[in-house]
Length: 300
Length: 216
Image (cartoon, rainbow over all chains, first blue to last red; front, top):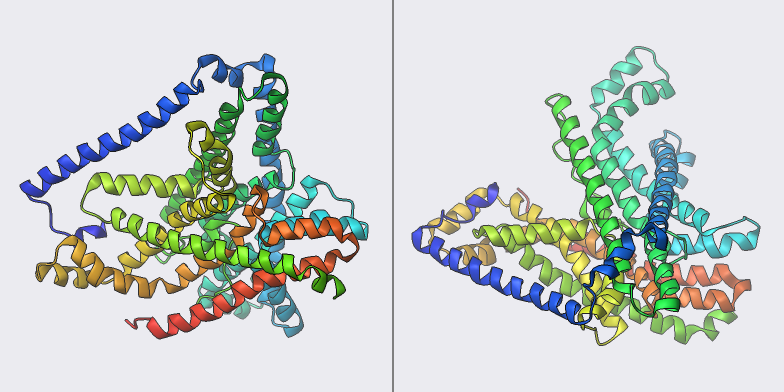
């Protein structure tokens, strides 16, 4: 760890101070958590039967949450496939030798990266039906996610293709391959392999962004939880609100952590298998990870 | 155009809300993120662990879920933000701080080790070395990533629309209901509102980067 450059190894006195600080800090945090729990307890939120509803098939809650999760995953999956395909096409278009392809494609990429994802989704949901395109919340969400992420992925692919050693391309041309062959047989396979970790990381971001479905009333996890709450409020009052929200939030976090772990695993594997010249700078830029984001600042 | 002048008040106040959301949460996120970055490289293991935990949790939580919890969740522990706006600022700052922290940490790692070693050799404590030697250099190298975080934040403010803050996207939803015949103009106006924030920011970031970049 490079942080060891920043400080000397703590001596006995510093270590004692750190231990005292740790204990005090831990106590403070424990006190805060305890306070929150006690408030929950006083409000009766910790009663077992309130939580039991989450696991009781008779209440229909587990099924509904499962369905919400499936809806989330299906939006993300369709979006991932479409965004990857279009992203690859756009990347190739942007690297084209023809100016009349390169410039418009570049504009499309820059535009979709600069507009907030939610606006894109709302555009698909509200505007496209007025010009005769049949729309549902699902389609709007998929289309919005695709438009935004294909632009981001196009940049990722482009960076990957450009990072392949020049000699590869030159050698392929020297062998008499056509441009298409060079791209599909030589450059893309190497680029994809190199960009795989970043690609997977971006797909995790896409999954995160699918939670925007909550705002456009698509029945993904959060919206499902909310509608369940409204349903239960009707018959039981405010009884299960907190439990359902916590459940939905936790499922989201768990799924995302699992996918992020997968991304790290993929990264480790590619790093191990690729030869010496391989990636060490494939960390996804923070703005891309933020989702709904992506700056317009191009790298120098 | 008629419609633009009719709704200029709504659009203007929505634009100001978006801008102030972005600026206030940007400042909060910068402060919190800097503290977190300091914790992540600090000599005290529990502080490192705490900051790492924070960053991992918030990077893996969709911003919508953060909003959701602050808007509907914390009522159950008898906490409440004074207004919707402040809820949105809190959600955006907490979320963005994790990314600011990561950007800064990479900047801190990019400062040549000799700098920190020299600072220690001069007898500076960890806090002094960080504040006076390492962080100033780190900030200079992370201008582009921080700028990207800022632009992403400006765009992420649109999520506040789903939680009853009347910023640009919310005004879009409202105007779209009323002016169904002029939907394109509504969208164009709102997108222009975001571009007015992001495009000059991108330009400014490039200027700042050129001015403060350290050539190594």
